[in-house]
Image 1 (cartoon, helix red, strand yellow):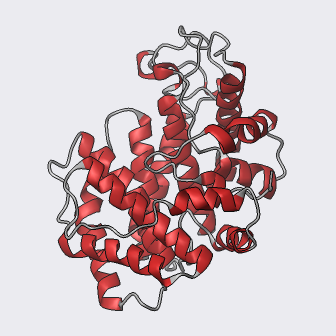
Image 2 (spheres, helix red, strand yellow):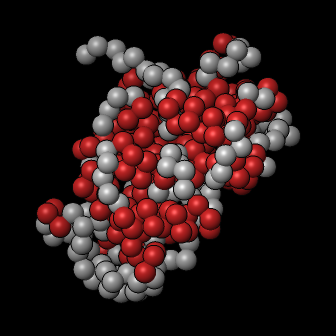
Image 3 (cartoon, one colour):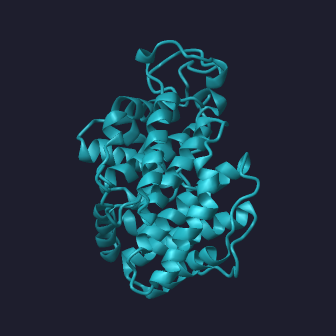
Length: 341
């Protein structure tokens, strides 16, 4: 097999989207500039002299690294670049990994890797980042993150999808073909297990799917777990991972077009109507609303010209005005909004 030629920048943030948003931010055009101002509040230096050991501290470093990397790309301001590589270098020099390599740490490694990985990929060719420091961060990812990412979680599917999101972003930054291919295999397998189509036939284990009352296209493994909270995490991670693959010339989107679009539309419909349409025993959807949907909508609507009417309504009416970013769901209405409304 010929060695893969990786595209950079080519993690979840591809050059087309980065350059599009950069032009909008430079021109102070709305809604991008308003979203940028919100994100820029996180684009500050970390005061940590070593990688935090606690979940909340790691989350803050991950968010700061990603915000600074994006802010540098959009503005060219060297302060943001120095902040971003400062955080990455601290992790490269001090982070030894997660113990135990099990349970919550598998999810935590996914969350943090899905923030630090894309940040490192954006900064990959920044002239002020020395090759020695960059190589040290790549080594850190391989020795400290791979153990908790490559051990697939036996918990619910959103954890595996979060791990996969991190795997693919980190693999691109490290130009690690073996890790990239492992992430693709996991994504293909989990997409079939997590996103349901009626054509798949009866559910193999009702309990694993939290006992849905109806089998419908777009049902996710966790739709009836909490009516949307974890489903949004699972959906966001799957679409982020598919976006990385797309930026590297692999069309996971196309392979899962019916599954992904059905899931996006079903959840959007439920959140718009305030009803689960008796899909679950609890008929009221979650009040949680995260800043996701934009990555999948951008691909299927803008790139593929597929109509997603309820997804569009939800994005315009609620997501861009009421949603919030959390963990690896990070300001998608800034980074992947290409329609201007």
